[in-house]
Length: 89
Image (tube, rainbow, N blue to C red; front, side, top):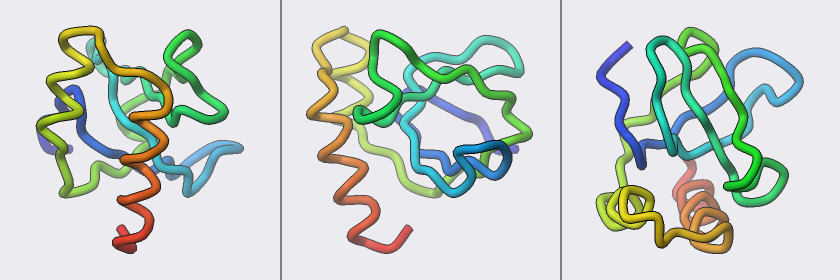
């Protein structure tokens, strides 16, 4: 898998959430902490193994900076994921 970074987008490829889009908010070794702003909110991120996700070739620098500075909210994440889906990623 390519280098994963905070603010990158992934799609789940295993589990009950197969096909769901997420944003990476934290990495911990081989695990990623993912949120979608809807079911998985910032207060309860999904912990998922890196081999169970597909890293998309999309990265939002503005969202990444908001996550790193802890100023992001669930609405920001939902909005960016919706824009991502509208572009058919």
